[in-house]
Image (cartoon, rainbow, N blue to C red):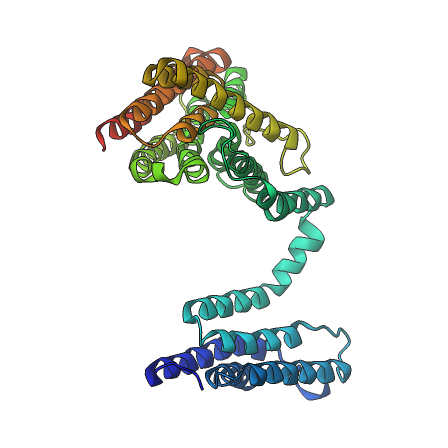
Length: 423
């Protein structure tokens, strides 16, 4: 018999009943009538889940296996006798999984409940999932998705999780960052396709900022300089891309050294909130004077066009960023070995001229959030803000910079101040 107390056993049975009813409710709505009706509905799923929990409570592993075999046999018979025009095995597989969820309630109630909710969600989005795969998802996007999945599920576990030189050049950390870059590019691509017609400038800038905020600012600046879009709106989109920069700092910290999250979350979120509010005010405000759209012109709505519209990410670009990260890590580590804390600060500042996240990742990978490291990150933020200002002036002109600079420097100053004073 099971060693669970009566109260715990009753809880497991109650959760199993709830999980079975949850999945069964969704299946009952799709269950047909007459000879073409499905194998199981509300009651069958509820009883199957409770049966799994009861079998597990006996403590007899053989009984659990026999129960699973009986459910599988019933599913095979039902599939063989299915007379519908479009036979499938979704309900049969769901019934067997529901039995296993019942078994799981005895050892882990939260995991069993989460699995039941996930199963119900998968069953409920049938039509949308089919439309997404058949009509919306392109062949190149499917290949990119498979490549990303292979990298995360197969490639990352094979990479050694130890630094190759001091605390720098951890292959697993670089691989995680590469996967993160590809995932963010994929999210930006999907956002451009899904959100291209509603609040296009703001949403596209937010999505493109995860790929490159500096490139987004430059692209919107060119649109503003050409007169095809209001300068104020384009500056607001450029500032909104900085929201992604702040959020990506947290993602990089989580991937490289999670200890940084304790001191970085408040500065990053505060800076992101200020940039979001200021950028949205600029985007939603009316254009006046020189900011009025040229008659007959269509405002630019995609801040950072992909080189190929059907590709979710650029593997070469992500590899280049990962290589840049590794090079900056080596530079920062070498300077710190030679010059101490001053070398860390100088190396981070040099790296920020090339890429913000590569520079902070080098700092994160070299040390924990001590005073010198926080000063290096503050300097990185300031140098990067100066780089963005220069990019805005060169691409969009003085009017574009006047709209962009106040929000850019205020949100940077807020994040830097909080990071500097917090311990």
